[in-house]
Amino acid sequence: MNVGIIGCGAIANIIASRIVPENNGIKIKYFFDKDIERAENLASFAGGVAVIDLDDMLNDVDLVVECASPASVKSLAPVILEKGIDMIVMSIGAFMDRDFYVEMENLARENNAHIHLPSGAIVGLDGIKAVADFGLKEITLVTRKSPRSLGKDIDTEEVLFEGKASQAVKEFPLNINVAATISLACSRDIDVKIIVDPKVDRNVHEITARGDFGEFKTTTMNHPCAANPKTSMLAAISAIKLLKSFNDTITVGL
Image 1: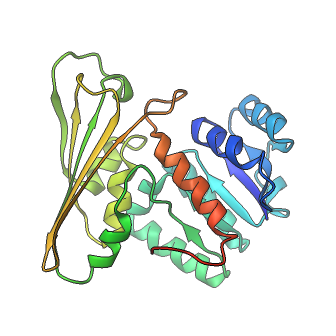
Image 2: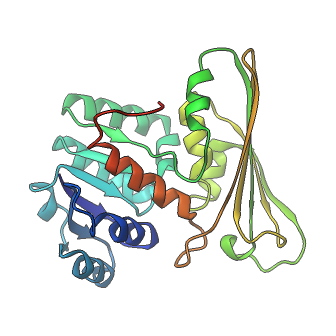
């Protein structure tokens, strides 16, 4: 399977560092970034090719992994899907735009392509999907991040946001993809609270779900990527596992 990557920052570097050394039938061959030097550096490591024009990779890839931004998803996904190429999208917040979601779903279906949205920086997404249509009454997300990861210089805890996921991803497009992931998994605009907390040095996500099935809570305390504190290591790891799963004969879980 030939793979192209869009966005050659922290997540792309982690994915390449894990996938490239393994003989697993996955070849990360092309790298595209608005900063061509970043693309060239990662291509050099991976033994791949940095491209200036996205079209230069699309005739030779089976899958594109997007690791850039919601804006990149909105501008580039239509081009990729129209060519019948599958995608892994890391900037899941783009799909909180309902019109865009429906448009991409239809475009993918018409061209026999598939869009994969990794679980990202949270655990328990399989449970959320399982109960979504079976009496789920309430689901909330509380996220705590360090001031550094949110670009803040404060020494006391502060609630930065409290409201719906759809608004959270607009105000924090590079920080709160988890809210979009949960919302899309259960087909509702979940309640979100974002707290900047100088006492934490990890990205903490607490999910609570209640309904006819009972109740469950999950907490993840993720180490941020060294190269980008806005991003959790687990987000990159989830994409790596998803990539590798395409070779699996037996899969476990949803």
